[in-house]
Length: 129
Ligand SMILES: [Zn+2]
View (cartoon, rainbow, N blue to C red):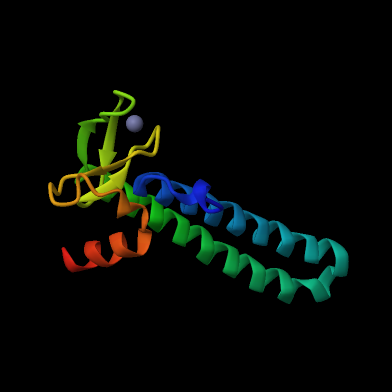
């Protein structure tokens, strides 16, 4: 139950990581700039390293957003049976973006509450690729 927050739909998870990386990248660039203010000319090397790292992290976040966008175009749009709203799912099993109900396209797993086990889900998704 502790990891409840992270049990969200895959598209939402991608967006979350994209946001985290964006903030981390900006934080690193701010830190680099702070280096110049604190140490003057000597802080320049420090600032340069953090600027480059920040840029890499920001580019990473852009890549994740781009990837999430690509994935969401191939996602299946369906109406959630629990909350009635339109949601997107990736792969054969995913969670509703709104109420986090597990949705599946695989009739074999439809009635199995053991889908709560994320590791089982992950290995099955790997196999289906
Ligand atoms: Zn729902």
